[in-house]
Image (cartoon, rainbow, N blue to C red; front, side):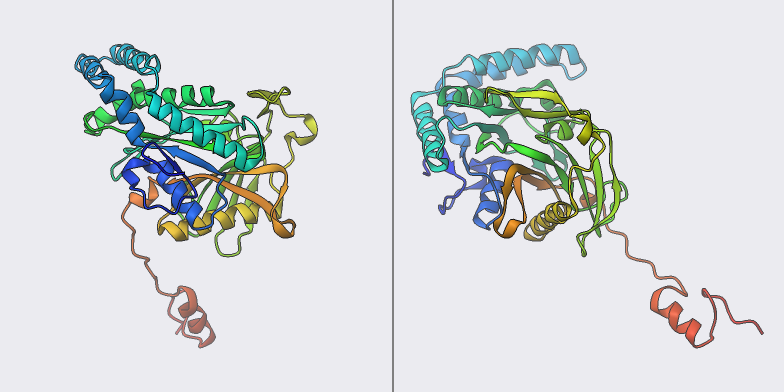
Length: 366
């Protein structure tokens, strides 16, 4: 379904990226191109605007923002809390609530599960500007079940446009408060056995010939947030094999609660703590997915991925799912330095040695 307020990720309709925010626009594009993205839909920025414009909230928000002093972090926290309270306590307009509820029910029917658990993620239009990245500054809510709970999570995501961290970051990067909009992504949750992140450039030294994977047991949020030390795999981008593996003690994992409602942080049993959480074929599958996404975008990518429990792709290959993808924002913004070829390097060195013209660039002895 595609309407003013909701857009299915598998739609064929032409939808402006401004209505979807960075995260949802990327997921819609990846879905169209056949990437293994969990099914779901976006709540558009139009819905956000209706909430704030039709209820007069914009004026209330502007009034609170006018009292912020960038040099007063404690005051910014107070103003942030007040704005978030105003947004969270405002009822979702009926037309928006009806559209979101209908689309959520359609998702439940499509996957064959009543009140299917979903991830509800913020998708702001300002997430990845040319000179700034807002990754991790807005809210995500996991394992949400039922239409009412989804609507509440959407509203909380909207309110996270004004976290103290986001307000401060916008001020520091001269991003105006006027014109801010946020969409929200709603996707079927993945009950992950293993999950994490992958970058298509080495974040340590910027080497574009490597893919670096961080992985942990369970859902990937503990890896993304830095709450656990993940296993680390440095992968050759051509061969898709690990050239360096660092296995870390993995003491905790985020898993589904025994009653199926919500998530719990549980201890990893001792038999798995020092075991790599990715097998060689899974390393290749994650790296292959990251490489394919980089090729489609034409620039280095930072992706989040998951491998579901007891699920395999056709032919028995690991079923790696793409949860989100964003542009890598550190090394990809630095100017590339031209490669410098020194005397006696590469093929030239071999030729010189074979012809007896020198060794390691030195003249032969007289």
